Length: 533
Image 1: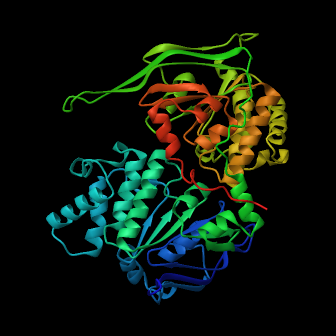
Image 2: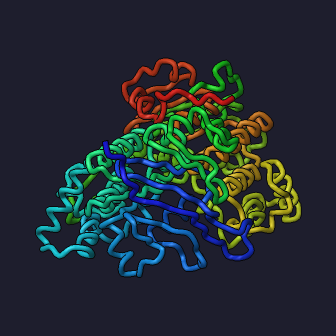
Image 3: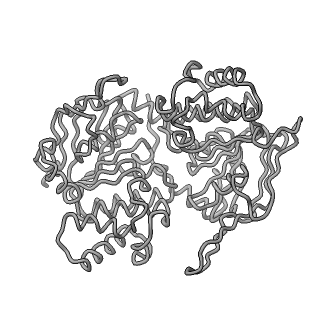
């Protein structure tokens, strides 16, 4: 049998960083290959050089990166010496790419069908009718429902999973020989993630396509990889067959990444919380009405008769897919939107403190929730000063909180862009704690973090809860994370609570079919855990 040929060969690739960085090279002399019909996963934390490598292959490196050395051979031709016109022709025809965030990759004011059609217009000479037929066929291939209707939809009218499928259709419509997938499932629910992974694997097998799959999720690697390349600080620290790297890793760094993946073993199985009730939600419903004079009226029941209670010292997890009502519930609780019916009540408070001193929220993306033009110290003290705390006292408290969340107290004078993603999330936690709240609402607070940073932030939240007796409402789509930090769980589906109970009970024997579907969709769940010796 003839061995598969290498579609992509990267040899001694080095990409220098501009002066003043924390290291000299974004990518430092790496070599890797992808063969026809093979999925190679490149895994590593933020800053490891994964995405920069993908950009170099696509010829999309920002102009700030100069003096690139080494070779990138695609089907025997060095793309580093290709002209801009040759690279434009290569993208789409030879190499397709799926980007991480579809809402930034898609044009918000252009219909999705037209955006897929743009690939055909750029590379082929076809009639409008022929192009439309090809686009509809591509949308059907990635299992988008009702392609004729979705062709005319705008990105905001699609779910996250549907938007990601649009990007896959655009990347594959010219039948490229190599697909680069840069964190394509990071922000997706487990069921949608499972569907996208299955789809990429099926398309790869059907077409004999090579896939370079970039991720920091070890569960995804277990699910999809033939071979694994582990990167750290711009270097390759380990590579080999997936079974060998994941189950018998040689590098301490690889072991650390695998160790940092949360298990499905509940960490608080014996934890009984008896504190006073801090939050009570009774029959909260949220109904949205849309449509107008020339459109049919549409009624969306985002939240239906939802009730819960949360005690001091307890973490209540809320899990479910996008559209299940999790974030709508959080917004109703935080009084960011008004419920259509029902009520939210905070527990008894000595001194009758104002609402927003008693409850605070930590958002998913700390970079968007922190003002880029303000120092982090200014962001932390804003709330207390609004409630009358003197500036000097508030800034001293900000320094104490920076230390409490494991950051340098003198860093209060820095700006958000000067911190890593994990550090920014710690700053968001410090800002929430500055109000000395009784209740924290964490809305997907760790979903975008690397596994090692995620583990650190989860330990921090757990430690802060014990120290401050906080009540925490923890919203997540990651069941592994829920297992590590939650005492009880509420499972939401289409705006309703379908199951609730102790984490240990639900994980041992989920009663509802939807909950069982969530568990079955966890990537890498069925694989043997790595033996670390």
